[in-house]
Image 1 (cartoon, rainbow over the protein chains, first blue to last red):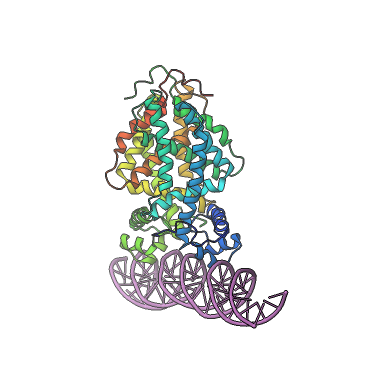
Image 2 (image 1 turned 90 degrees about the horizontal axis):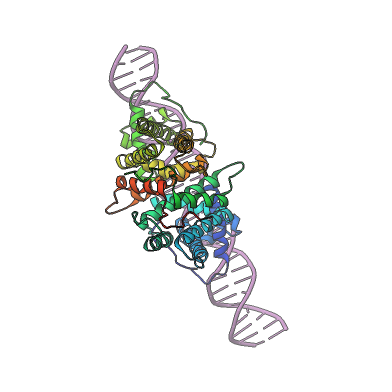
Length: 210
Length: 210
DNA sequence: CTCGGGTGAATGAACCGTCATTCAGTCACA
DNA sequence: TGTGACTGAATGACGGTTCATTCACCCGAG
């Protein structure tokens, strides 16, 4: 619940990765609390005890999984927006890239989306730096748009970032939990973009909301 | 994990309510899995066993708590938007009312916000009708706005409802988990309204996003 | 090349604390 | 005295964690 092993406790090869992959699958399927360490071990093809050679505890395993996956997500998003110029286009690229990741790696998305929340509760002391980084990079896109005069400057960028993340996250959750035929989450990116850039308003007097 | 007791198992007076109130507090503080039934009993001022006179299991207690609180939330929101005319104003009233509820009843918000998610995982068979009702009523506001030509008709209302809920929920979570001085979530309602009605776009060519 | 002692990663059965749940008994009231 | 709501200590299952043991591999000596 407290500290956290930063890197491979030993020079151990890929076994640590195998365990993380298994944890991703098992946590995604059952959720953290109902997931069994012994099942993670089974899926990883190692003995129960081996997990404790690489991770301090079940909690530490979850934290390490966050760090690992969020690092990848942040890198992928940074790469996706890097070549794009113009705040609006960058924001759209961000949205498309995020929902694309959800589509391509559902179990990563499931762990981040569902477990992030409860972890922020039961690990109050864990600051979750990677997620903070995620929000910061989104807030930067907003701030740049405001500076360029392309975005409304009323909302503080960090709050706007949270709201946008809320949209993306909820959409991801709805898509992940949908049984039966799912809506096209990649196409939904354009709806999200439309809503966030233009808003719902279409009428003549929509300016006067205050 | 499965079935659920619809109403007071017995004619029992307010004891059932006392237990629900205690469960709300304890689940909000610890989360469902780390909450202890014995603590709920202690807070409610009843014996451990008494809880099982009113609820089948810990799971059933959580489900019953959802039903009870969501029912109140839905009623409060319905009441808040009922007298308001015009889709834009109704949507704003909905947003203000929801964030007002979060502000006034943080522990209700915490349970709904944080536990709703994991419950949708670990209780796959529980359909969560009250939450569906919540989304439906929000979708109705959107659909009316589209029908009146006041809202963009591109996005399917149920999806728009989910996105809007995402914004509200994430904002609630950010506010609830904030340690130290919190931002003013009631004031944030206007930012949310602004973002959802007008969008971020301010520049000349923001129409061309496709 | 072969042998044998040393090393430490890996194993998994057993341990042990932790609760959700039960139920035999109490008690207030009719 | 009978009834039934209520109690809370006892129960038993469960699962995270440990640790005595195994064994594949390495390396220096002969």
